Length: 112
Image (cartoon, rainbow, N blue to C red):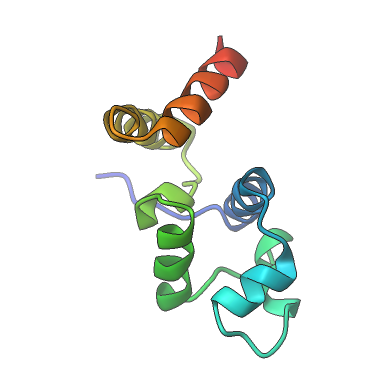
């Protein structure tokens, strides 16, 4: 059985992308997560560390994603399956949300 390992660099880049795409600034994220400093957020973005489980949960709720939707795994094939699962999950949620539907369609335009 293949061990699944979180890719810190790619996860940090992905979290940064998601926050940028959602229009969430670092200072806003600091406030949402009730952090004393914004430095830990930059450490996530730069791949130096990962958010704690409680911060991952709040971040996922803020971005309307499952926690596993924030994590990128090191193995490419596993990561591809992970991304496919996220796309399927978003597609299901997009049925009931105009905002998610618009984002989903714009993402599909990028992929295709």
